[in-house]
Amino acid sequence: MNAKGIIAIIAVFAMISVPLYMASDDSDAASYSANVFTDAGGSQKGYTGSGATVRDIVESALAPDHTITVDGVGRITAVDGATAPEGMAWIVFQWMPLQGWTVRPLNNDANGYLDTGTSYYVTLSEKTADGLNTIYSKPTYEPAAQAYFFIKFITDVNAPSVLGIMNESRRSEGFWITGTGSDAAEAFSDACTRYALPLNMNLIDGNEQKGWLGSFVGLQDDRSSGDWNNWSQFHWANGTWIYSDCLGHYDPGVVKYYAIVRQITVEDRASDNTGIVPSSDINVLSPSDLSSGGTVAASSISINPNTVSLTPGSAYTLGVTFNPTATTNKSVTWSSSDTSVATIDGAGKITAKSEGKTTITAVSASGGRTAACTVTVSSSAAPTEPAPADGQTPADTTVWLNHESVNIDINDTLSLGAQIYPTTLTVSWSSSDDSVATVSDGKVTPVSPGTAVITVTTSDGKASADCSVIILAAGISQDPDRNGMLIAGIAVAVIAVLAVALIVVRLHAKP
Image 1 (tube, rainbow, N blue to C red):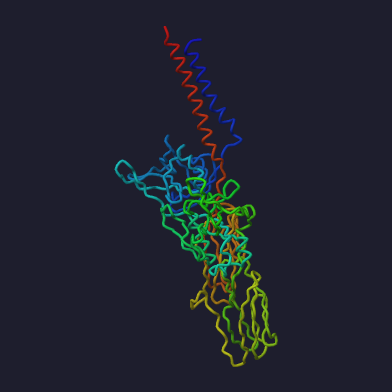
Image 2 (cartoon, rainbow, N blue to C red):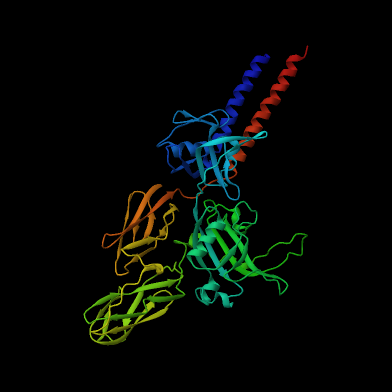
């Protein structure tokens, strides 16, 4: 057989070997999901996409509204047929904790980062020269995702600073809190704010120590006994808890579950490196045991107001404040010490019957906390005015929401909180698009990826407030070895082809 024939066989072998290699691994093909944002239409909009490459994800996400043109090296040359003006470029960014938005061309280099972030942004970016490098302006938007944190006390269960948190049993067993942020440090800070847990933590963007706990619930690192009594941090991966770096290194869109454990840790003196040996009972729960981040018990309640003056036959509705504000079950049982003076129903509505005094008591279903209000009924009494929310005194009906905008993972829920004035009013909830998200008593339940506006309206119809929610795709599901296996297979095939070709050339060159 002549050299041309041999080379033809080599070419056929090359064309067959790589596809066969790829086909042989189809059953294990990686499947990635990610959120893709763009302002290409003039305003920012969020989408979800999926695929085996960054290009697949971006193209599938934008397909409902936009088309992109990509050159041979993975650069976007046009969006919807429009090329970038002079001095600008269409850029794809990926959100990375610590670094923020990072340029990602739609090529194999970007595919190597598929398991490190779940948000991309396609935008027109301004170019500036910095020596041999080109600097691109970055989006100002920061994507956020929900994360869950398991708090457990192995030591310091009854430290003075923690006695108001849950009860001794719950502190020992552990409890879940949840928060939202662009990295796990931001999410933990948000969770601590929601649950009124004191926190001192490094939140400096770009700092390698972002997420370092200075103190949490009044407890710092302590080595007075020889070993460290500190807050150990773990994250959930591959079915187990893994000792973590600082929380600022993690994207909650990728790593959703964390454990913050107060315990004794010791030095590993068997090696030259100092290591942390976590207590063996860290694996007390797995994320699969969660419903919506666990429950939060009330540590105290108060009645607003704590004294009321009424005339016989009049009525007044009391309010209850829970600490922490994120208490899961906010139901209470009401009672009156003298029902001949005043009665109270299950909604906290007092009805004055006859002159005299009575004590109204509320007992929380969560934690069994109690609070009291003194009610005076008199024909000459000046009726108590409804108390304003948050210490404010608005002139008209007013309603506040605890969020103006928020991103929610499609597998999660979010409870919105509303405060109203006058407090005697009630509220109703609605969603602008029930196919994206529904709402009931403030609890937002995702239905499908997209954007919806949740509206709360007072019962007199005089005030309302909105919260824009973006429902994001579920967290990344991937096989991180897929790309490496594919690249290795292609490399083997190419090396084999080149080796055979070299032999053929040498044989052909012999006299």
